[in-house]
Length: 229
Image (tube, rainbow, N blue to C red; front, side, top):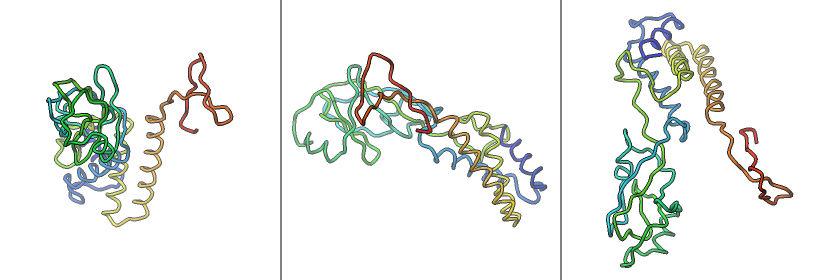
């Protein structure tokens, strides 16, 4: 569904037209729904991205814009950093600064990283230009206010599209001073969002077998952990 189709659907359900609620206002309602879904979950799989950046000899700190410079749209959250040989361990900035004093002249290949004030700090300070591989989650594409009529919420699979319109229906009923219907459609929105979250985020993760509170490793593949566990 593009944003014009969503508006038409909202108008047909609430039995209104653009003289009751302007197209711009409906677009803003739809944008509210989009933002709630986007920022209600940090790790939607379609935001997963990877890229690289290059360190500078003698420089410890790198802005998030630099770290995500190779990622279209920019980097929202950093999940992991690694060199070609090792995965860098994340540590608190206080611990890192204590173990690797910035007043020290010692440098080397980074083993650890911290994040503070939208900056990545590498420990120890890099001694040369080194390619760092980045995995994380990209910034969402804007959708709602200011979107052209043919624009779709491209970041999200089609099952989410009707969800944004459902939230718009709730907000339209609220604007039309019908709190009962507004609450009903808001409940539908929340229930469907829970269903879609379970569908798209309930990915099994490998876990070792646990017997009597002890983890047991075997030659057999690790078991899978499911969403209900």
